Length: 506
Image 1 (cartoon, rainbow, N blue to C red):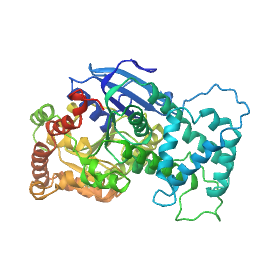
Image 2 (image 1 turned 30 degrees about the horizontal axis):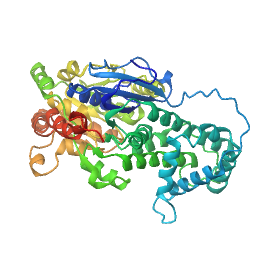
Image 3 (image 1 turned 90 degrees about the vertical axis):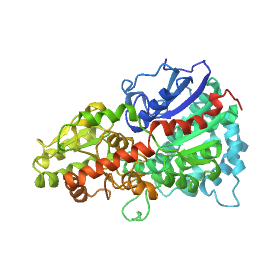
Image 4 (image 1 turned 180 degrees about the vertical axis):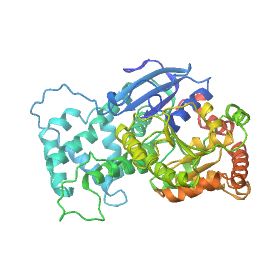
């Protein structure tokens, strides 16, 4: 079912980047939930990954209504072209220069947004050739000129290969857009490369394009890029300004910002998980009239019975459920446990999530456990079924430095488990409520600052006390049952999926 280009038309074509079905986690769980929630629709899946070797076996069994899965790896592109001398089209690269001028200063009246439209149209129609970009004299001169005018990094070699690595996937996406079978609706679950593919498909077919952003893609990529060690900064100590990031990081950030704008411009409906992110989408270029907030919802009928499986008392178990990756800041949770155990010697920490996405970081976390003398108190459980896990724990912990609307908190509430979370994404809203009626339900846990082990420890120890735990449990159950059910979410997506459900075509 996976591999090359499929031929079967579908109702909904999902455009997924680095998520379902090869990566577990909140977004993947949500995708699985949506597909299974609309069994009357046929789905096709385009999976965009980095390199084939970065992914193992599928983490999810494909639902029966998935007609096909087509996998493509953006940085495994192996062109077998033999480089040959070619001059290239000077007019073509003059048009590219105008589009890049608008990318660099989108609010400048002297730059033309229409130049971007023309560039994308020529890319899609095959006028802007990959070989010209890779091998032509005009392309070489264009890259050299851009380097002289704009680069603040002294290495031209790094600049040249960064530009090629950044743009090479674009031709793969254009080829995909030209050859995918038709769908009544295209649904991308991020901007980035998947969102850009959605924009190209919108241009090609005129079909409805729906964008659902769980986190804001450009914000998350900025975090990744700030933390990455593969991006070079060749400036010496005298050339660096403490207030400015390295040029190549800035170049990648601008690139993803432009991909995001193209998706926002093309999408018919733009969904955020909560109001603050909807406002962020508008600031980043989305048309406010096409945006809306639709909260995640959980399967209450499946999770509520887990409350009956809980034993008497409050298990002194703090559990972080998530991937062992830097953005989840597992190390802060581990450091907090040193203080927690000092005050509650019976407490344990469970870390339930896969470690294969960032094995070096996972090893660092294990070494930190040893160095803090917590080997008998911190357990790495690997991937776990949440149904088996939740009845055994006392508090769900989320120490992330970035989140959107984390399903794990809602799942914990449904099973009767309160939470301690960092003040990221919608976590404050999920714990303390939003609006008078929601806030009146009470606090379903505690919110602490990012990267603050002491505050996390204090909140966790406090929440384990019966006087705080039982009211938080009741608030969490009431909040999830009133505002965050799967039924509410499916009702919203039934409206968004109307072109696929009714058989309408653009």
